[in-house]
Length: 87
Image (cartoon, rainbow, N blue to C red; front, top):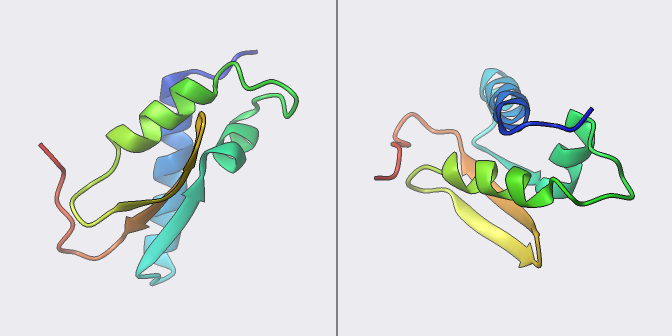
């Protein structure tokens, strides 16, 4: 089954919440790893643009793109209480 944007968003929310509960100040998320966790085929990147788009849309003020290559991206999500959504 092909992963949906909702599934990527849901899994990313879980990753962020677990890191927050463990007291981490930030978490680095790689789109390739997120894609695999949601069930994207490792030899197929056809849903990578959707995964990447979800990750970027979930960024908040203070978050940053650490690495970007083609359709893959690594984002550092800051988990502090001062993070606010970007407009």
